[in-house]
Amino acid sequence: MAITEKPIISVSGVRGEIGVSLDVSVITRFAMAFGTFVGGRTVVVGRDSRTSSPTVRHAVLAGLFATGCHVIDVGLCPTPTILLIAKALHAQGSITVTASHNPVAWNGIEFAAASGSLLTQAERDELMRIYETEDFALAPWNEQGTLETYDEAIAYHLERVRHARWLAPDSIRKAGLKVVLDCGNGAGSVISPSLLRKLGCRIVELNCVADGHFRRSAEPTPEALDELCETVRASKADIGFAHDGDADRLVLVTDQGIPLNGEWTLALVADFILGKTKGDVVATVSTSRMLDDIAAKHGVRLHRTKVGVGWVVEKMREVNAAIGGEGTGGVVYPDIHWTTDGIASIAAITQYLAESGSTVTQLVENMPQYQMCRKKLEIPSQELASRLIERALKVYEEASAIGKEPLLELTDGVKRVWDDRWVNIRPSGTEPVIRVFSEAPTLAEAARLCDETLETLTVLMKQMSC
Image 1 (cartoon, helix red, strand yellow):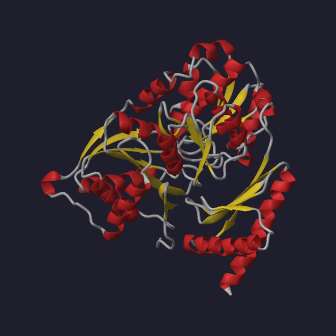
Image 2 (tube, rainbow, N blue to C red):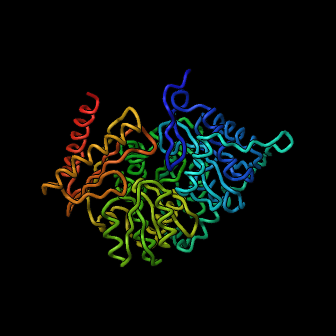
Image 3 (cartoon, rainbow, N blue to C red):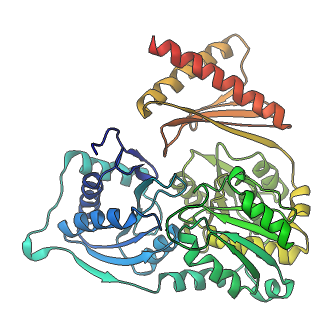
């Protein structure tokens, strides 16, 4: 099958649909670029459970070997595990074979630096320069790369989480929590059930076989969690947990079997952590206003960044933040490592439940209440998406000039902000779409903001195609 589309290259790495927009030659070229970038030294490689991941892994190994790298292969692991072990083993970087929350037909690779965090903007620019110019430092025949396997990555990650300063496993054990866990047949299947057992929880497992045949969407949206919700209600569990494909995210289902979007994971964890550790909070421009209220409650500052874990981590390091993350269910725990970690989130949420003596429903009811709407507009190409957003900005700026527009924030895409609501449009870094997120006091108002914005974008796109 001929490759008919281009892969998506972004802050998250490289992703595409296997056989449609991603082939092994692109993967090998990027691996050669990364091997050159790290000077042919040590690189940790791991993969998620997708059926195409072994193929992509071999393409990665070819590129790294060609540039003389020593590869430490940790096998099938969650993304946060791979980044954590790369730092622990003092590797010069890591490559994770994953498409995270993208559909099962997709795959890709993510890069991390020696610190175990995603590449900075300067590092990404240099990697792309090497890739685009093909300025590869290829090794001669007698200096080709080597391979080592490492089987202790999962155990190391579990120990790091269990020794987090905010975790008291004995209190969780005494609480006797019953948990339903849905790993989506992804990489979380190899670690999260073990963590919950070590914390003394009673577990009901759903989709916890890491075979890559996802029996629900890789992205754990509320719409994808019907089975989890039904099982929580039927088993009278205290909470339901769901991972995405590589377990860097976690979303929750309440004790009443109500699915919560990823905003609630960051909100509840931030409230819990800030009750123990003072420090600022970092979140993206499209994360809920709940974070503003939580930061105010604890007397700390909220910093907002572009969407993407790399941007969040850069700002967290800059301000020495106590906690940060995205409204996708990804939370960064700086005392563990500098990336989103859905496994650590399981520990944090169960600790919060055990300490508070409250149900998830009660914790949610005690939070400020806002309603969000998330929609997207499919776009033929990322280049067209960027042009469309530029066109929309001009329209909004013209309206602002005559006093008909709210505050415009341009941190990432275009965010229009009123006193009690907002709407943000931006090109996706992982899919050929424009994402439209809004938040308002009621769901109807949030949906209306999304729909009005989508209508404007649709009209502008038609004008541009004429």
